[in-house]
Length: 59
Ligand SMILES: [Zn+2]
Image (cartoon, rainbow, N blue to C red; front, side, top):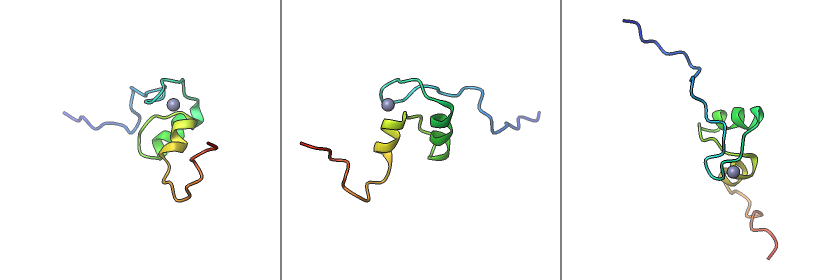
């Protein structure tokens, strides 16, 4: 049998893994491109390599 799977996964998460927020198409696309974790824009930004420590925010 030919079980070749297409790259399109029929089960696509549409909510943020961290907070459960519903993702936009752009956020889903970005999640796929960034490694497959489904994160909203807020948590996707937190997942980015912190080359600059400017994410501390005001105290
Ligand atoms: Zn989130």
